[in-house]
Structure formats: C-alpha cells, structure tokens
Length: 150
Image (cartoon, rainbow, N blue to C red; front, side):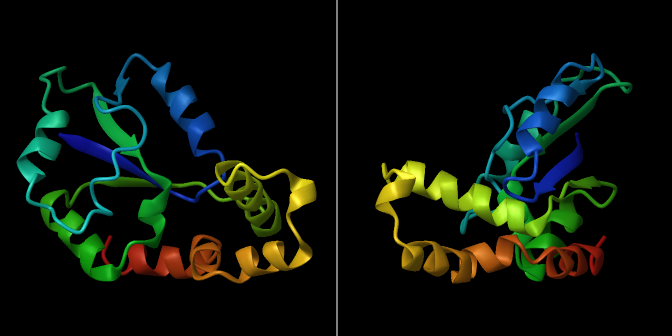
C-alpha cells in the first residue's frame, strides 16, 4: 500500500529527502524517487501503480514516492488520489522562493545546454515569469489545493 507521497516543491531538497529516507530500514521506494504517475493525463495504469506498493513487506514498512511536480496538480486530480489513498501522508518540503527559482533557472540552462554567460537578462526574466515557475513557487496555492482534499 502507498503510505506517503512527497509532493514537492521542485528544487527544494526532495532528492536529499529521498536519499535520507531510503536509508531507513522501514521505508521503501519500490519505483525509485519520481514515478510521475499522477501528473499523467491517462490513469488507465492505476492497477500497475498500486501494485508497486504491494510487496508484502509487513505492516511496519512504509511505501512511498516523491515527485515534486505533484505539488502543482489540480484539485480534481488530488481528489482522485484521495479516492484511492484516503489515509495518505503528504510530505511538502519548501525552500526560500528566490533560491528555489534561481536553482530552477540554472537547471533549465543546463537542460538547454547553455552556460550562464549565454543567457540574457531577458531569458532569466522570462523564466521567472513563466507559468511553470510561478506555479512551482506558489507554495500557498499548492498547500491550499492539497489541504482542500486532505
């Protein structure tokens, strides 16, 4: 059974949390850190997802996953998660929003195979103003969405 879900925030230490929890003998991540199941459009593979957390390890073992993009899921999707896992524990780790935004921008640069010197001020401004960056840094909105269901 899925016991806990790490929902983000992106660039806030979720990998550190995953690595730390992975060392505990009673915590399991059967599908590694990020599954990205709930941010898919099609949930037809729900039995597969549920099977990831049904390894019969015993009642003292807790199964989970940490996918930072889950923080920004829409309320309707959070309600679907709740319908399948009503007793789920949520982990939401946050970071100074300015530091988080800079870290995200640097990650985007690396993915674009650009050096910092190649990016203009306008590139950074566009990144910080993008809908994705604003959503990921909107901690209160994310908390309210999840809190409205859980």
